[in-house]
Structures are given as structure tokens and as C-alpha cells.
Length: 555
Image (tube, rainbow, N blue to C red; front, side, top):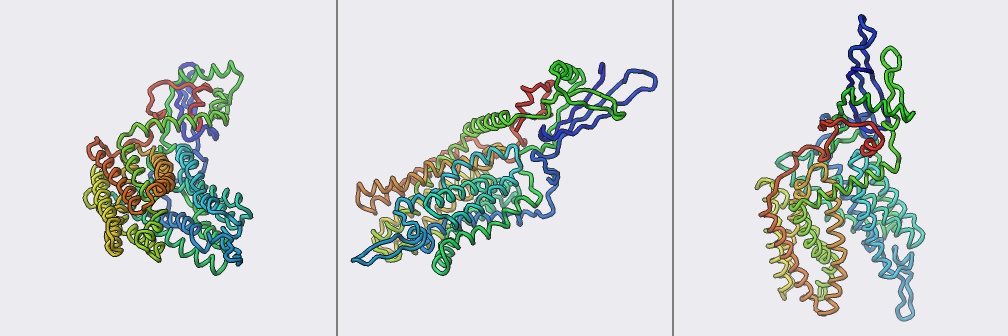
């Protein structure tokens, strides 16, 4: 090979290596003056030739169309939450009063579940959601995020159909867990896509529209589950959900996916290696008797490249994936702005989760409401939609920055806490409704800003993981433990007014945590370089093609 100069260009993964070589020969010399070789890989990590270049969107795409699709999917996710809790689907257990026994209705009656088992079903999806969210966020590093959403929605579709076909408690419990797995891919990756494609001056408003689908979906789920469960069968409600989601699951695979900002397209990952370095690596591979022939344009043997350059063991891929995940976690946990935001979100969700579970019972006990479910449900739905939209539009109006987001989070939560606290002090039901409604509008105004900070306080490549970890934390430390803890408190004080006032006071804690965020040095990192890991192109060192170093690039 001698003084031959070679250039190696690496694109995508190592598994589908294609070789292009050009060896110019001099007519006056038996030794070639220069040789140039290019080794390239498929454009995308998943080997899909249909994927568009990062600077070219597929023909189906418009930002508003993407927002509508994701809003419908998000709403269907939360329709399922409402369905499983609706009286038409959840039903009632078998009971006997004065010698007269009823067969029970819905899931509870069909499987003869006690209240504990019924409670497990309502929250079983959380197990799959919490476990799978970080996994999907990590896989987004090596697989197209749009395709991952397709996989998740497919799991969700099959799982909801399985709920309708379940034959005992454990079968439906497992299906509910798989529903959470399916939802995990979407909640981790949808918000970054919306953030990428929303108009610069309307980013928080678009996020608010997306999160507005949460209370809307739950409300529709209550109505849908009640109607279908009472007029057809509780199983039909789940099958209907599955049919409605099926087209979106199929779309996730058949339409050309988008490139998520923060993940360097494989087309841009290039490595330029000098001929001298390449010569040494190929000589090393000859000693190991493992190589792949690379021929010139005339068909003659040009060089022998190591086979290990084109293959990675499954173990190497798993080890690399885990290693990459922990490195990303270290970077994420070093972001003070992100941590403060999530801590405030945990305290906030602790209160909101307990409100949603204990609110009707507290309202019935304090104000003797005969229709507490309808009252609290109606207030939450209307105020949730109005507050969520208002928070997003206001932040865009005052200029979407992390500092302004913290100001809105702290201020709205503080005022909301005052109104909600005052509401429970009223002896009059009408005074309670008026103040509590205003308080909920202010409290729900945080949804857009809090997720804006999650997305813009970290490197773009960490956004799926930041959303996943935020979701995990607010559930594990927020609404999951809050309901039983409030129950313990109520057992101790035996006064729902006092319990509600103590619970509401935690909103002041959330406001205080977010207030700290105003004074932290914050930088909007949305426009930072794509990947925080150094690419081969950016390196000035001479890479080797030996197996140890190649295994570091397996994904």
C-alpha cells in the first residue's frame, strides 16, 4: 500500500457496510501514486432507505398536521384512563343486602374483585409506564424516535384489545401493564417532536394544546365508558379504543418518519483516516487472519479490512446501550435548572394526584354534596382546559424563556394555592366552588411552562430522557404515594377540612421551589449542537479499526 492515501467515510451503523473504492493508476509508474477509498454505511441506523435527509421533511408533514395527530393520540391514551375508571366499565362488585344478592357489573362484578384488586387494575399501567419510559428514551439514541412511537402504539393497541379479551384478574392486570409500556414511547418522544416543529413564538402554546388533551381525554373516557359499558358490554369499550388507535400505530411504520432535533443524522457522522493509520490497522487484521476484501475499480485486491469493523456482538450493543444511558443520566442529573423544575413538579403533582382521588369524598363530607363526582369532575375538566391553554399562551406572550417560565410557575402556583386554600375555609358551598375553580385554573396554568423548562434546560439529545425521567419522578414521588399518605393523615385527624388544608399547603412548597429557579443561571439549550457525544468527524485522533474500539460504536 506504501504511500497510498485513503479516506474512510462512515455513515450509520456497522452492520450493512457498503464499499466504494477508487484506485487511480499512473501510466508511467508501476506503483500507484494515490489511492482513495470510501467506506460508507446506510443513511439511517435502522437501515430504512425511505428515511428523509435531516434537512428535508416528508411530503405528509406540516407542523399543524403533526400537532393534530399527536393530540388525538394523547387524547386516546387518556380516554383509556377514563374508561377503566368509569362506572360502565369498572362496574361494581357482587353484594348481598337483606338476603337479596346482586351479580355485580363491569370488570369488578365479572371477575368478582375486591376494592384492592380493583385499585391495582386502575394503576397497573403505571408499572409499565415507569419501567419503559427510560428505556424508550435511551433507545431513541440508536433508533429513529418516530419508529419507536409506532412500536409503542402497536403494543398499546394489542394490550387494550387484550383487556377486552381478558379471562381473569391477572390476565387483565398484565394487559394494563402493557398499556403503560405502549404509552411510554409516546410520552417520552411526542413533546420533543412538537417542540421542534412549533412556531418559535408559539412553542409553549402548542405544548399547552397537547397537554390540554389530558383532562379532555379523561372526561371523554368517562362518558364513552359509561355509554358503551351500559349499552353494549365493558369488553366492547376496550375493543373500541384499540380500533381507534390502530390507524395511528400503522402510520408509525408506513409513513416516512421525521428526524428529531438533537440526534445527529448518520449522514453527518464521518471519519477521515490517514493512509498510514489504515495501513497499520489492516496489517494488524492480517495477523489475526480475519478480514474483508476491498477491491479497486479494476477488480484487483486492494486491501483487507478487519471483519470486526462490520459487526458487533449483541452483548457489545447491550453494554454500550447501558453505558450510554448512564452517561446521559449523569449529564441530566448535573443540570440544576432541570432538577429544580422536576422537584417543584413533584410537589405540585403530589397535591393534584390527591385532589383527583380524594376530592369528591372530601367535598361530600365537608359540604354534603350529593353529586360530588360530577361537581369535582366538571370543575377539573373545564378549569384544566382553560388553565392549561392560558398558561401556554401567556408564556409565549411575555417571551418564552426559562426564567419567565419559572416566574409564571411560581406566581401561578402561589396564587392558585391561596385560592384553593381559601376555598376549603368557606362554609358556603358556592363560595367554595367559586374560589376552587379560580385556584384550579391558576394551578393548571403550569402545564405548558413546566414542560417547556424540561425540554429547553437540557441538551437537545437528552430531551426524550428528560421527559421520561420527569414522568417517572412525578409519579413515583408525587401522585402514587400522595393518596395513601393523605388517607393515613385523614385517619389520624378525622377531619376532611383540616386534611384538605394541610394537603393544599404543599402547593406553597412547589411555588417556593420554582421561585428558586428564577435566580438560577439558565440558558435555553434548544439550539445547541445535536449530540453531546463527540463524533468521529470532530475528532483529530487517528481511530483504529480494532474490535475494542469498534465495540464502543455499537448501538
